[in-house]
Picture 1 (cartoon, rainbow, N blue to C red):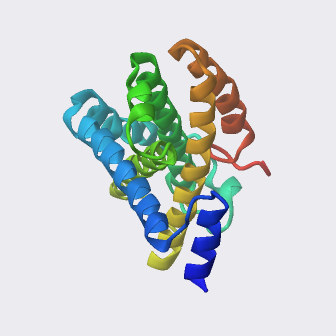
Picture 2 (picture 1 turned 180 degrees about the vertical axis):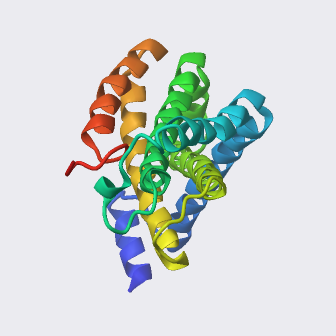
Length: 222
């Protein structure tokens, strides 16, 4: 049956579709995504400023808001199951860190666009979806590293989360899904932006309302 369909397609002048060509397409997709992902992670490993920001950003949030405002905020307004303000703010800071990681992912794409690297991707024998997959994967890995560092720092300073290991794993799964979605959003803005200033202005206008309208820093009920 399959040979008859291939023969009919050839007689009609249509391209023949085989399972091997489909598997080759998937192979090219993942191979291209891996190469670009490896490039992004190599740049991350060799950039001391980016590594310093990855380590310093969570510590700055914990010290400024978590430890600094610990004695100012009334723990009684945070809920019955919250032992301290640091424990309350840690999940919110992790979410904000994930948002920042997604923004940086779009910034990387815009930087490659400005420098002409994106054009080299387009002429390479790889599907264009590989670029998006690599950008999403690198953003998720960087955010996961930063979030784990933040969680460890918060626990060192005394934060005790009211959940078990399964709850923490599920929370990180949801976090990575959030990062994947927002990376796509930030990449869309980066694709339409022509300069770093314009990109940061748009993301700045969107991020501030999300920060102050959420319960990341204080409970909305109070």
